Amino acid sequence: MDSQTIVILGAGSWGSALAHLLGSKGHTVRLWDRDFDLVEGIRAHATNRKYLPDVLLPETVTAVPSMKEAVTDADWVVVAVASGGIRPVVAEAAAFFHPRTAVLSASKGLEAETGLTTSEVITTLLSDVGYAGLAVLSGPNLARELTRGVPTASVVASLDPQMARAAQSLLMTERTFRVYTHSDVKGVELGGALKNVLAIGAGLSDGLGFGDNTKAALMTRGLMEMTQLGVAAGGKALTFLGLSGVGDLMATASSKLSRNYRVGLGLAAHKTREQILAELHQAAEGIPTARAAQVLSTRHGVAIPVFTALNDVLHNGLSPSVAVEALMTRAAREEFPG
Image (tube, rainbow, N blue to C red):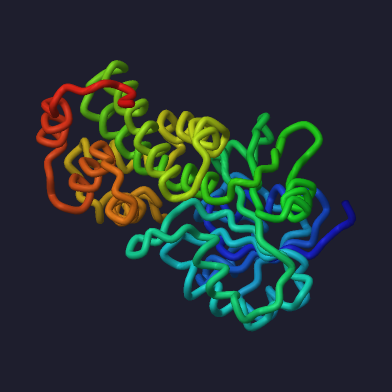
């Protein structure tokens, strides 16, 4: 693929890892962030010292503080901000789109109040703007491992097969980053978002010392709920067994590089949500997504007891021990009801 001009909105660890990947492929990358000091630090040191201090960014990557400077004449706009920041950031960027600008959503979250996926929020904001199309990226892609060049796989989904293939070509490398295409946008996004809640549960389980039996039960039943909710919302069941579902869950529910897993560990250590986020220095998408899952559960009439228990621990002050007891004392039932 010929060199293209790519804007990455959000210079956190994930946005910076994508900048490293795309810049290493020879693309011209503009890395935008609202944090002026962060941008200036990247410009001065060619390194994101706050989030990826050991990663030298290629010369093809430039940190940019101006949205107009970043987005004007871009071939691709990659949205890598936390889900809570998508509305204001994309609304600001939309003024500088042109008809050939393509959008790649790389944010793995849901809007807490509405349950909307990131692509649903983005397409709403761009409804009056000319742009080339949209794809979403998801999968077991921890930022630090991606920059190390270890063998990694991911998936890009779009309702337009040509757009999915274009995103695949943009991202895929010969030996280290294998990218698959998909047409189930809703399923890919919900898998990538909902697994973050379960990753918090995995960290909580490990932190409380419950052992492998507990964690396996929690992840398996949680995956079942995730699939049932995703299918009710319009996704395909098989998608949740793929890279954006069980694949991403395997990575984020076991790695201490995972912010959501570390949230669970913090909760087990009796830290407050605010203390945990202050230590992370970044958003943990599982926290707002736990609330969004409840919105979707009510909207689609799907019971999700594991997700509800985790939401109550995160947002309603329920103690983990009480949450576990409530789950373990539910009425007996079939594993796969007819």
